[in-house]
Length: 368
Ligand SMILES: NC(=O)C1=CN([C@@H]2O[C@H](COP(=O)(O)OP(=O)(O)OC[C@H]3O[C@@H](n4cnc5c(N)ncnc54)[C@H](O)[C@@H]3O)[C@@H](O)[C@H]2O)C=CC1
Ligand SMILES: CC(C)CC(=O)C(=O)O
Ligand SMILES: [Mg+2]
Image 1 (tube, rainbow, N blue to C red):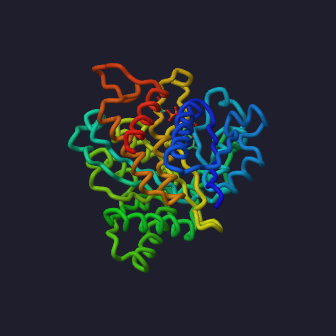
Image 2 (image 1 turned 90 degrees about the horizontal axis):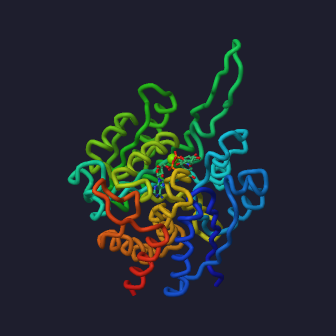
Image 3 (image 1 turned 135 degrees about the vertical axis):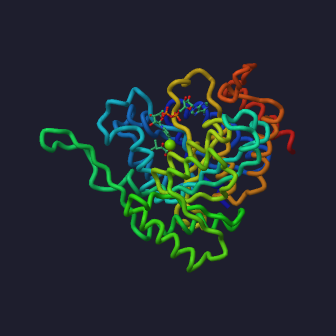
């Protein structure tokens, strides 16, 4: 049988720095676990713009549609701030999500024991935290029409449209309920039904799907602003949080700080099953290209490495190998390995991006 295929799109800023460590880990699974991937690489974001004049070339898009999974680093940076909107690096990423129809974005926020002291919240509020945000990823205000900046009465007006169809809400809701059944069986759906019609529809459809097919799952609803507050006040009340594209983007960055750093949060973006039964899939850290630390060897590669662990679990049915990789990360953190973002105010010696890769590979060796 052919090896499973991966397309690596490292992108911009710290994207290539953290992805270098993922490549070493992908290689380790080939060498030591007989789990060999056919890996190809291409450009996305500013890197693609620099070479092709667009943030994602059509040939790259076509490759992404063909592989078993895409691993993406990050896109964007100040160099591209003044580009026309359609050429901005972020448009390349949005095109991948839209054209691969990756509607379910899974963003787990887990607090590793070793980092509980490091969170900006009190230890007892975050220790043992394990929540999953399911963010709708292909619709909502990031994609809705009309959009743009135009002139009205001699004044510039910026327009974006929040738009959801029933079908879009339903499939995201099903993804959340299915995941909840494998976890603690609770879903909290977040919108703003108090002020947005799309929020009223969201709540209605989630209730309908629940009553029809998932009555065994505990369902609650929360306005997203209260949800943000509750995430910081008492995050362990949640199991699965289901929410739209914009609220999910914001709430997941917020959840990142519960785990200690944005450099810790992975994600999986999943679509419909392909002919081989695997879902269309892209795996990427939640963080961006971090221009403030690019080129300094300071980036934490763990979010990107944990995203590959999600690929092992969700695309390749290698749950035990995903567990092995996550356990290796847990072990190095317990042993005190820290990149700069994980250093407390008391300071200490931090590891570089590559050194963090080294200790994770050593822990993987120890796991054999
Ligand atoms: N998925 C993606 O590719 C995303 C891209 N972006 C883009 O990234 C660029 C920078 O955006 P920002 O708002 O600054 O968000 P960011 O996530 O790049 O950085 C926010 C802060 O977190 C820190 N940080 C992020 N990842 C880290 C890591 N792995 N290790 C250590 N520290 C880390 C950064 O140094 C910075 O202080 C923008 O062009 C933005 O559009 C932003 C979010 C997601
Ligand atoms: C297109 C991305 C830059 C938006 C974002 O912040 C994210 O998806 O996390
Ligand atoms: Mg974001």
